[in-house]
Length: 295
Image 1 (cartoon, rainbow, N blue to C red):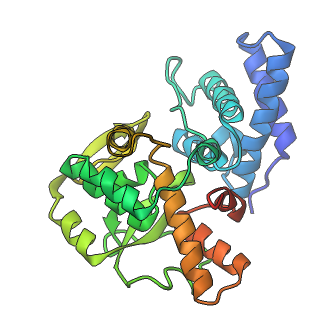
Image 2 (cartoon, rainbow, N blue to C red; image 1 turned 30 degrees about the vertical axis):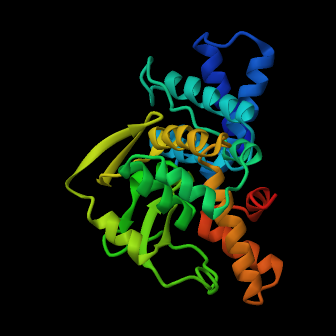
């Protein structure tokens, strides 16, 4: 069985490497980066990455930052990214001019956003071009993040990751068509798409998948629909035209969370059980972040 050094010891070793390279001079910066790398080492230990912090790949670092995005604000997340970037450049895991993508804090997005009503989402979708309009309807129906639209696959083509799952998941909704998406932290989860939207989605299946890059992260897209930052911008612009205001595309996930809480509690679930269920449907690692969506 592999042994894992304590996170603090790994982070201290990492900062020592950076100091020897002469790229850190401020004591305050060194302290902040060490604290950030302790969190990264904690993740490596939890994921049982052999070799720990020093052995993390670029993809694993991005997964770590995406998971942190549900827990911390943008300022802390940027510090985590900067610390990881300078360390992995120092040890050669990243090229000298290679950058880690800027990950947006989901916690900050959730705190800024507010839910849209179904009627408001419909008005926004009507104000968009077809590819983005379908994406808006899909995101609203399944609670998808912007980048998850780029990762949609039928469940027969890609299975969800094995994770604990409550039997109440998707209860109270039409059975729908099962798909999977890959969300924050690299978690692939099942989502359900209403039959009418699934038919429209399959009509836009690409004969050959295409490689797209969104905010520095690469995806293989299988459908000719909007997604990522481009769709988010389209949504905000359409919302401003149709409604006179916009709280951003992330508000669509708020709508899903709130409507699902009502549906599940109407079925008789206690609040805690309903919250756990919605958290799993949204791909959250902790139900505490889901609470923010219910304001």
